[in-house]
Structures are given as structure tokens and as C-alpha cells.
Length: 418
Image 1 (cartoon, rainbow, N blue to C red):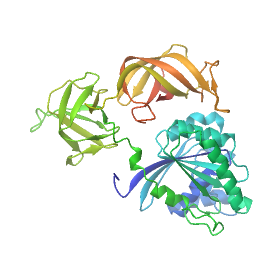
Image 2: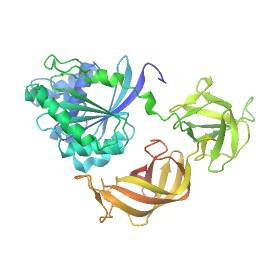
Image 3: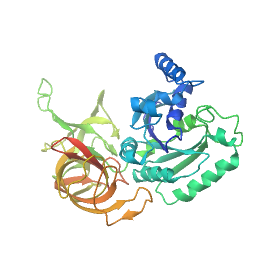
Image 4: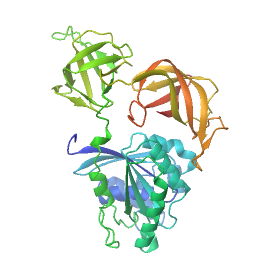
């Protein structure tokens, strides 16, 4: 079910420091002619001042002053570009271990992840770490780009050896779709245009791959979930008795006439109308923003969820969550936080840290129970009122949440419901 010919693809890039992530994104933007002339002129001037022979493509994404000085990426840099076939949002995430939280932020909404590997070094610990996080976040598509092929003389056997290394490792991960592309981001080989230096590679270049990855089926079309964000009561002529429920569909399909249940109350009704920005619709599906009216007057408010009666999420106050801690201050034992899940906000208590993932070895540490910045831990959480949840593996929208510190209003953690 394609939304339109210019569908949006979100992708994230990850790799070790100096693997060429920023250069690759710069090459994508440069070769696809997605850079404004004034931007190009500014980058050309900066490149000349630094003494580079040509244009330093990495400067297109390294926007922070510290990044430009160090030549590394230390924050999530978002970039947007469009081709005739698709719109793209790129999240360029840092490679350092101390910025794990930044990668989680950039990857949480991605349809695809580009994992960069330096052809000279092959699969290293950082590669495994980023691939594990991509798997943990259930990113449906992995594109493994073996970069700097120009520095290994474009040898096919080097590429084949790295592909085998990655396949041996990734067989343990929950990733459905993995593709491999040999590239040189610096020279442009197999980025936008096919490489003349690697005739042995029969696959598509990176941009064509990104343009043609099928992402419509990435949305969960089975479990119909509609978190209510607000109730529409216009109170004007022609709409005196109008009561519409507005929000964005998290997953599934809704049609007029469908029997629905409102959670957590359990009241049932049927959908009377489904309306989009341009009027009534015969059906609506994720991720459309709509309003719907029901045949019965039911007390519904923000935080409630409208679902199909024959397919309900679990309503529970006790959750097991894989939590990535994002705050400078460590988690406080049995402290209370606000949990935000779809449009629902409740108070939550971290009851127990079950184990911490060792980001170096990817093993589980059952002894260390302290959560500090960039730690990924499995925890038990209890909320004051039930949340309507699915497991993150089945539904990324209703299976994710964030924790917020009420005193500072800072997001302290992002979680995936197990």
C-alpha cells in the first residue's frame, strides 16, 4: 500500500569515527544536486581555508563548531533532500561509545540504517555495537556500506571477506533485510552513480537502493491503534452536536462501520465517519492524522485509545522495558517519573533494574544495577494507571515510551516495551 510516488524514507547512518559517514551524506547531497548554491559556496570557501584540494563533503553535515574543528560528528545532524522518486530525512549520528543515546535518538524513527565499515579494518566492535542497537530498535532494513574501497584497490575479495564477517555476526540479530554495497564516499563510487572501478559488483548504487526499498509494509497494518490526542467540539452552526476524536493513527486501518472498543474504559461503538484534511475518507491507515466520529456518545479524552474490538492491545500497569538512559544524572532508586506513551501521560516508578547490557561485549550484566548516561538496561516499571501497549517488536509506535523528569521537564530515558 504505497502512500504516494514521493514517499518519505527516514534513515540513519552509523559507524566508527572516521569511517566516512558525514562524507557519504555530503556525497549523496552533492551528487543528487540537493545543495543550495550559497551552501556550496560556503563549504568551498571553508575547504580552501583548510587547505583541501577539493570540496570537503563532510562539512555539509558537521554543523557544530566543535565538529568542524575536530572533524567528527558529536550530535545528531538531520538533513533533508528529495529525488523524483522519494523524500528523505537523514539522521547522521555520532560513532563514539559515549554518544549511544544520540544513536538511539536518531534511529528510533528510522525505516533504514546505513552501517558504514572501513574496508581496511573490516567488522570491528563499533560495527557490532551499532548493528546491535539497530536490531534492538527493530529498524527493518540495514544497508551495510563497505567504504574506502579506493584504499584497498577496489578488490572484490576484500569486500567478500567483510560481507562474510558481517553475515556471521548478524545471524544472531533480529534483522529481516540486510544489503551490502561496496563504495567510496570520497570519490563517489556506487553512491549515486555506478562505479566503473568495481565492475564485479552487480547490485544497485546506494541512492537507487534507498529509493526502491519497500517500506509500506514496515507499518503494522494488522493491529489497529488510534491514540486520541484531542476531542473536537466546534460549537458553531452546522456542528452544534459534532464530537470528533482527533489524532494520528499508530497502526492498522480504520473504516466507517468498523466495530471499535475504547480503552481503557472498554465501551464499544461503531465508527460513523473518518475525516482527513480534505473531507470524509473511505479508510484511513498509519501514519495518517485524522478525526473520527462514533455512532454513540462515549466519554473519551486525550490518552484514551480507539482499537478494533476483535484486536485489542494489553492494558497493564506493570511493564518490562528495555531502557536507554539519556540524562547526565543517574536514575534514582524508586524515583517517580512521568511516562509518555502515545498520547497518554502517567506517573511511573522504576521498580527494578533486571540487567544492564554491556555495550562492549553485548553481554548481560545482572550485578550492576546503576543506570547512568548511555546505559541500556532491562527494567520493570509500574504506572499509576494502565497503558495500552503492544510489544515493541510487533508495533514500534505503541511499544515505545519515554520517561520525563517532572522537576526539570527533561527526557531522561527512551524505552522499548518487551
